[in-house]
Amino acid sequence: MLVLGVETSCDETSVAIVRDGKEVLSNVIHSQIDVHALYGGVVPEIASRQHVYQISMVFEKAFRDAKVTPEEIDLVAVTKGPGLIGSLLVGVNAAKTFALLYEKPIIGVHHLAGHIYANAIEHEMKFPSVALLVSGGNTELIYMKDHFEFEIIGQTLDDAVGEAYDKVARVVGLSYPGGPAVDRLATEGKDTYLLPRVYLSADSYDFSFSGLKSAVINLVHRASLKNEEISVADLCASFQNAVTEVLVQKTFRLAKEKKVKQIIVAGGVSANRGLKERFERENDGFEICIPSIRYCTDNAAMIAAAGYYQYRKNPHTDDLSMNAVANLELT
Ligand code: KG4
Image (cartoon, protein in one colour):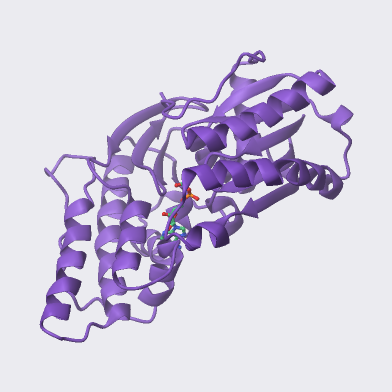
């Protein structure tokens, strides 16, 4: 089955063609990072306009790269939400236009299901499993009994991990997007600053990162008032250690409790080297799946893969009244 995937939920315009949820024939990603970097973060109005400029070219390139014709597509899968509404609408309308023009079935896919199914491209998903979803807008621990059965066990009570990374990066003077920059510097530094690890109660699977973020901000401000030097690399290493310790500890605890076969790590922050290393170092017998970097951040191949499994589980298709939903629920 040849699935056309379309993703425009935030600041990446992406179209992919994937066979049977595995074989990626093309995965074109146009990133808007350069444009938003001028403002230190994503500006929603600019993001939607950029999607409008790019979407037709990205569609055309996806077909050229894959060497297939529109007639050969069996199913269109498009990110329906959650995300920036103006951005989502561009992808949904482009996908619906394609489906109408070529008389193809279309389904709306949840963006976070896409991140989870990025793993299906390179790994065989085994159930039951636990997914740790870490991105700019989400931090969730999800139990999956089977394909497309999501039970949210824990989530952040305040900031998402990626959001905390971006904020810390800004405070220490690193450019947007901050996550990769903090990750890079963390490898050059040592965990020398004492920062809080927030576990909430002993049996809680929820997360909280705003206290940790504030601790870093206060430390930087105090040092600047006293004219003291800060080692940015050490601070990044200390922050990264505090974040990954809690994420990994809670994920393993849930995996043991649920006796799962596999742990899936997904979302933009799954590209983090410190997180990957800690999972490998502390693993005690689980199969851990983390996507390759190119499938960690937003891309349409993961949407096509998720669409394939979603359709196989429930061959329901949407009609052309399908619309984008900014706060779409996963469950
Ligand atoms: O999943 P994603 O591409 O977009 C959504 O939020 O849906 O995630 C983007 C987030 C940003 O906050 C970015 O700073 C973070 O993922 N990120 C990282 C790394 N690469 C991207 N955070 C930590 N370490 C990284 N290597």
